[in-house]
Image (cartoon, rainbow, N blue to C red; front, side, top):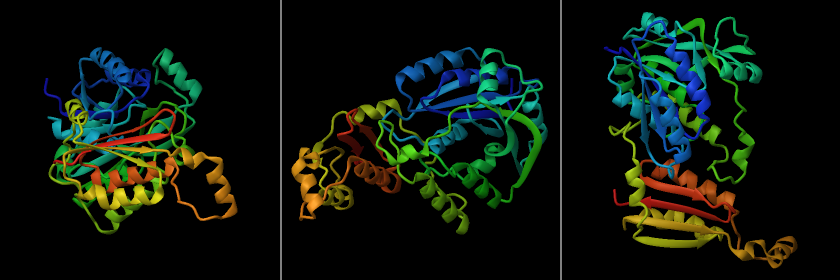
Length: 363
């Protein structure tokens, strides 16, 4: 069968039950002229193995693992890999939380136009209704909490996505990557069509805890990342930047690349003394060219000592220290702004007293 549309999902460490339900909804499509690419960007093995088993049950779906667990979450790179490897003329970017009514693909084919891209309305389901759908999928006469517009679920001509070099790979974690893509697609002259018919439903899940961005957690989080991403989007918009990525867009590291990081050429250990951390990240690391460098940031025992705290309270001169959260944010910003296209691994210890950053600078 010649599939004219590819639906691309980006995934990492999510509940596979909702993925299974999304694929079930696609299995009921009246028009079978489509295929699914599920791009797993660096999931832990326990999630990846469960997802592989789910995807195998659907003959229209293909699973691809790219990246590795040490890389920061980057939805743009995951989707771009799918875009570059899709073989159809049209692409639908989707979200694993979405359920599709049986006529969705039929409608998408009607809307397919090389000079146009389409965005869709979506109905949001309550926790109770979502749980009902998990027990028995039935999208007829379904109740929603509200209906809204989507930015990230769209139908695009592949040739247009290639023209803008996909989603901007600057965007990490979450925020603005979809809106940025749509803005840049319009710069090519493609017209935006908003489909008013509700054919998508969003499965309930807890809201992303933005307040956790201000705390150090095992899962890397960056303070104020939403605003940083918004600023980048506005910069692209104000300067009419249509293709911010390099020609290598859509290329991803693989599991094998993580093995390259296991044998560093040099290991550097730094305490959380502020001056040492700043100087290393801004002056020493950019000048490194010795291949794989492993950096271990360690919380100094003196940092939590009574003596240090008393000196602080009395206003006595003492060596300034960074908290491990502050070091986390500095390293993550270095990755975003300087090292996002390098092969690296980033990990926070379970006791939050160590941060391990390994990077291959030989490229």
